[in-house]
Image (cartoon, rainbow over all chains, first blue to last red; front, side, top):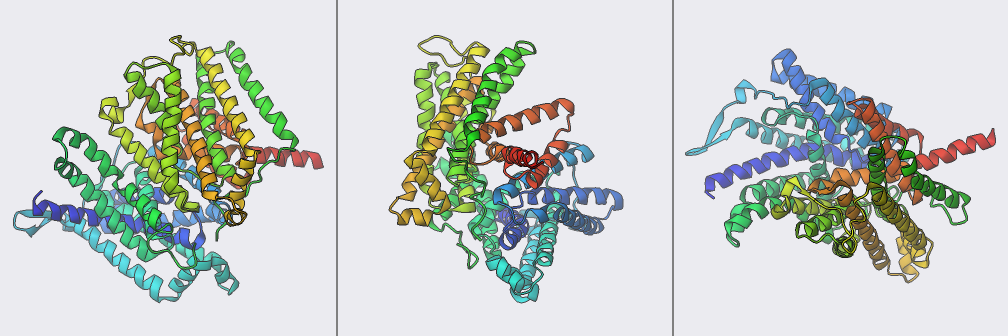
Length: 308
Length: 330
């Protein structure tokens, strides 16, 4: 367990946390403002990755592919909103779950039908493809730093948007009491559409950014979706600040747990059981964390005001 | 903003006439399946319907806590998995008698429900969903780390459970009736509970927990008892599932499984008990039928779920009511 390895894993944890934040941000907004459980958020992340791959194959330029993928994801998201989600806002959470689960099943299969079941890859953009020296003898891929940087930039943007603009004020008001906002004469449906479209684009952005270092395959959104829910529940539903901090926390805990669980267990038990127990404990860590947080703070760490 | 999770579908009352007729018809049909199966591919049909009933038992338990108690558990598959692992682990040590393995399966799931219920039941609504998911995932990862019992790959069970050393479940047809009996027992148990004094408090806690505790009931303890019963019945389902597939693996406890159980009870109609049986049958039979038509069956199944939610509120039972209402007016 050298210092260099710890630094690398902390950076990896940050990168994973930032990715989770990009997905969780949209989820917590949609859930907080519209009281809508959108399980299909994970497949929108997957779609972002696939669209980036597809447009890259067409244009050969990552930046152009990214922009086109975001635009296409936005159009598709708004289409879904218009055709299906709009009719679900007044329904039970459970009905929302089943309908959006149906969309997951459909899209996972559709992606498999269109692009095949084999994982696809997207090359890292030339300009960012190398590694830089963090410390003497310690290299770190530039692209991961780009992901961390862009995630933090979007975090800042969201902070300004949600905290200091008129739309942001309405979003915060909506998270606290959507019906009251509507009664005050705000076109709540337009607000919903803006929030939903924005959330979709964030998820697609996350998918497109991670595509170069992850294999793009059907079902890649499912595990991330569960983690994003863990993030927004720990952070407190509807709270952007909570989602940000919880995402970084989960990213770090999960990454560091997976890297060092076996080494730490070896201090207290023989190597052979440590090797079998270690990975299980590492995978469980974030769920233990969530159970602990909910036990002591049943509404998460930063509950949006006005929610019980 | 507190609407939702408790799902507003009505709970049918004892005096409702279809409560008697429809469940009786369901069980009669299930009892006749082996005879009809004799005309076709018998072991395939028996296997399919055995699977339907095994999942129906787990769905019944989930419908009890979810439809009547308002406790939406997203980790229900963990109970099924624990029951299945009890059979598998005992079997690996040469203990196959159900006098040992059945009580072990029930007890193991009940204890897991008791321990996790103490934590879960302190939270409400979506937080309850997520914390039950968390415990389900923990059980999933623990099962995956059981290296002596197959780890991630799972564990094959060589023999079905025996009774006093007799292999009474070895025959597919007698196993089918054993599962049917278990389903009937589970159904009658939950019906008795729902309409008992305990059940009224349990249902009252769904409608308005504050009022129930003001009336002097310790809501938390009532819910914990209900949660433990549902867990134990989930274990029963797991015991049967392990015997049906003669295999256990961590995949039995995956969150997708828990999600499927939720979809089953929604599909049938929440808070009706027999709706859970219909839902389990509908889900598994639709899956099987579409799978037979095309490899891309999920392209049809997904939109079907969306359409059911958009146009058939209250599940298949709700849809049946609506159609009956239309016909009645015409």
